[in-house]
Length: 440
Image (cartoon, rainbow, N blue to C red; front, side, top):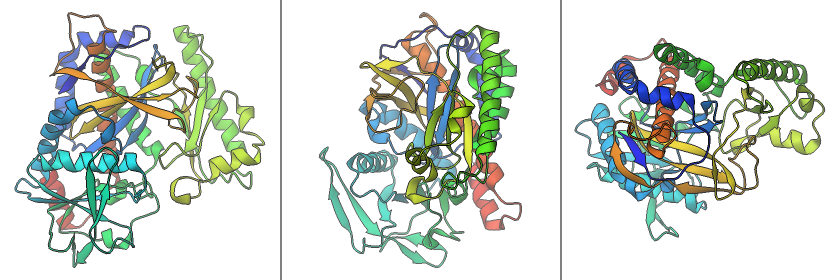
């Protein structure tokens, strides 16, 4: 279920694209064996960067909020994949509760919620939206700029079950990343499946844990294909107990930035890459492109000015940043409408269901594009296919996006490992039963 794209692309031919095409059968067999052992998240999105000489994920979101940016041509793929996911969770499910973020004024996000509801309803589910906002005390309709609408309803807790007035769901789907923690109303729901699990929220999850799991996946996959894993895996390091306001933790930042840059230089020399190495310093938890800076030399993290410190010190929901990840920067060779661009791949269950370009004309190819000024360009699919087009070159649209789908699925597999390792060893029997149901 890897789509065939019609969008014209730019950028040099990647050797790994050629390798992926030649070993497509090996790749799909490898994935099939892995999914027999691990349960994919219900859904996820992966931000990729294509440097021409390297293709790697730079972020994986377990609560994707951009389904509105997918082309309408993706709808059949989304519905089919959602059916597969739901059959594993609750085959006889009739009701599903969707819990979104509290962005009642963000039209783009709310359009994402509306699209999600449409996808899930087409699987045969009754879907209603429960809001965590305390001021939602009655069904509240919100009309959207694209002509659609959604209705938010107050959540109702009865014992170990969560629902709405007159609505008892089989499962609860979170589209809220729980950056500020788990609301009490969501705790101890042992009689319903909650997806993704509460432990996967940003109050608990760390990007470094994800990329540690990704490193394991990438190394095994690269060995299977005879690739250097660095070609698909960004180097990283971490620093904890950093306080940007008090200027503590600078020594760790300097040392780790220098270490990662040194590793990048070594690989650039090995592959004859003339680009200037850089790293991205960002919060080890959180989304929305907050708390991120591009660094080309370790000296740049010494003596940050007040504006820089304020930017790095606080993440989503005003949460204080104390743990940071220093991640290898991956240049992007992709450009759309004269702006630096990066592909974002969306998945439901274990299937690629679409994607779009994030474009930012005010940012350079070595900067974070998830920032003010970004726009999105839908990718129009032609016919969905399960294989690359061997009649075309490695850098053609179908094959380029087949490669993107492969690397995104590696990140999805890493997310499944990451979630498995979050489950405490003293998990309750009811939760074990739910896990067994999830595995089919």
